[in-house]
Image (cartoon, rainbow, N blue to C red; front, top):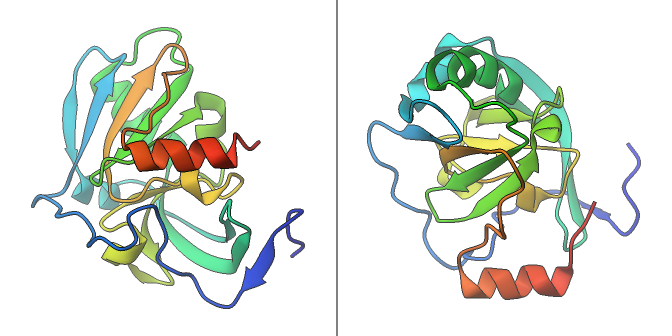
Length: 188
């Protein structure tokens, strides 16, 4: 596969993130994904429900905005579109005009995707990497995976999905993260 401009292939998939020096966040048992924002009913969905939905496996590269790419990673999970149609639309009742989705991790990290981007065929709520359950370094128990975008859009330790009828304000809470994202500038 060819790499995007400015990317270099590496032979491994490192633990990455602004807080790479901190331990991964503690995850409540049972692990839950809150559904909030522009919905009629706020819900808490057990991560275990993903096993009840149609599963997908994809082979995708993972591009970090800092310039490295881990190629050919094998991911397993549920497409976001399937989760949206099977759980969010039927149980939470999205308000008319939803255009953006904010994904928040248990570590406080947040990323926003346009709804159309979140509905891409390869966007997953991934709970497997390389045929086994995700480990804490790579976002256990479930993470968003949006392989057509840089890795900072693929929120680890997914704990909340918020629907919005317009693009929310900057979702980065931590000052260090806001500063680093400011340095990098927006990427397509």
